[in-house]
Length: 218
Image (cartoon, rainbow, N blue to C red; front, side, top):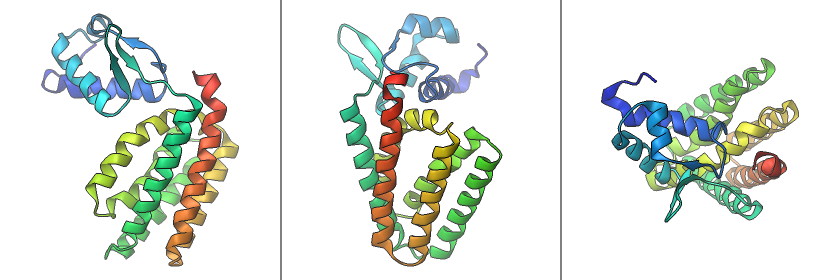
């Protein structure tokens, strides 16, 4: 596999991360240096660096006497992740509402939602999923709290594994689009607490979608 030597670990990291998020490498699968070296045709150093980053992303875990395994989830794990994510997204909305750049923020969210809905109509799942994620992430960019944003970024990786599965269903896409539009309307109306509570409900709905895919995926 041809890789640019100057950024070997970055490229390997991105490839493995995408493979895990799309479940080309399924949850619970063991990753060995030998097999990864054979796949990428590189030494162990860039692979170890990539695996370290995946560990920081909480996408893989190291177990003594076992090695590296891709994370796996129980129903309780999902409930904890989605509940906490709802709390974090709610905080991001609260903090973002205090930003002096409201006009810019709202213009950005409007554009994201337009592209999200257009992708749904075009049945472009990959693009839709990207803008659906962007709807959540945009509030972190305006919340002026880097620690909150970093916590959410690490946690969102686990959610992405499941959203990549359930976002293929048109009915679910439509519901998510409607919920995003309603959350943003409450935000524009200045009812921040309503927007926060709606975001938490939205994440709870997403939890229910994810739970449906738990036995199928793992």
